[in-house]
Length: 287
Image 1 (cartoon, rainbow, N blue to C red):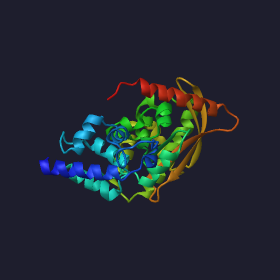
Image 2 (image 1 turned 90 degrees about the horizontal axis):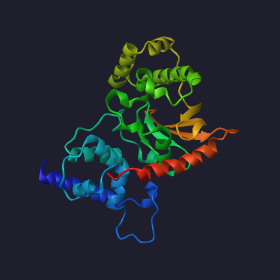
Image 3 (image 1 turned 60 degrees about the horizontal axis):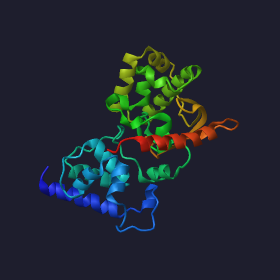
Image 4 (image 1 turned 45 degrees about the vertical axis):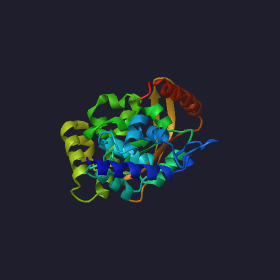
């Protein structure tokens, strides 16, 4: 990438950083702030980058950022889709298609996710690729956005990797499988006929999973809007939760959040998980 392009990229990142107020991304404004907008270290944390690397990007130096890093920066800086596309062009990277983990998340949906406090929440695509999670969702489910390729889709992992089912009680597995397949059929139906991403996902699942093949043949269709979820966490034990969904206008993305079921001890366990998750993050070495 040319020096001129690096300089343009750095200037664009700096301009977007300076326009955002800390409270807009869930950060405390603090009594003394010497810079307008966010600090570089705050953007780095939000984007999953080291402060040194992000600083080099703003200065117009450093290596070409990866697609994953650009997606993280676009979300951290609450870029519109046009701004996101411009960021990729400045970095000399192809603009990603909608659907993968680099998908653009609407800033309003990100803003709502930021404001959901005290309960796990995340944004995923209609093919169940998790795009972003709040800290409590990561503490409860792990970092689900860390997968690559076809495995970015949780429904793909569900039917091809037995380890993905370990967080559910055995008696809940069959109902969850049926629900996943019915929801996927609804998502495929919403997309354009012959949509390459959806078609390839279904074809691979039909080839690799007899269970999926049998359920797909049933032709059931049902969008997952609200469900009961029982999550087995290694530290706090069973969490009995309601899982609720808010959909984007085109149905391609959904915001999911989990609330304690009435009459259970899930609220107390989520409160404990908040502490456990915070301690775990503090214990991680700095990147």
